[in-house]
Amino acid sequence: MKKFTLLLILIGLVTLLILVLFVAAVSATTYKVDVDQDYGFYRVISSDKNQSMSYINKTINVTVGDTVIWINDATPDWPLTIISNQGLWGDRDAYLRWNYQKFNYTFNEPGIYSMYIKECRRCQNQTIIVNPIETATPLVSATMIRPTVPITPISTPITTPSTTNNNMTPGFEIILGVTALLSIYKSLMPKFKRR
Image (cartoon, rainbow, N blue to C red; front, side, top):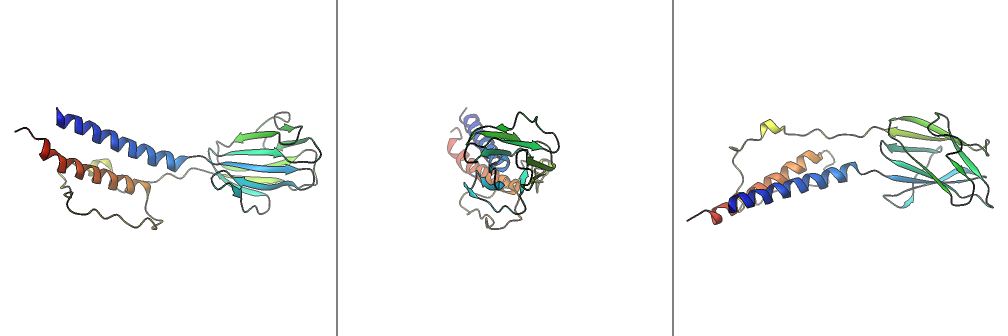
């Protein structure tokens, strides 16, 4: 009974570890674009850094699933309409009548999109490049992991590669976590064997 309980706890911890790593890898970003009647799309703020981003040639690079929010920052209360050249939304959907009024759109398809301000045709168009989500390929397939593989005892320190290595995939980190949890499980099991 105790072995079964420990096994369930171990499975729960592994599942939680995988879920946390997956959610962290695919979390979407929100970009806020300030718009006015003089400069058009003049500033972009990323939600993950909460500061102005590099914004060259009015171009933003985003990933599928990211959201862009356009905010009317015109003075005094100058109405603005954000128009998509690809027809992603209707003209009235992005009509920003008052200051600080917002319109948002989540990009779900990769591609290059452009938009302009209807009331400010002399302002430069904004370009949004939507990149596909990159998926990590696992270093080890599920068929390569077998129960007969010897597990490092808990008394031996488990060394992990440096986190500064940009070539390490999230799949490798998951395998390290599972190996560590299995080592802990194996070291605890003799304590709970029936006498």
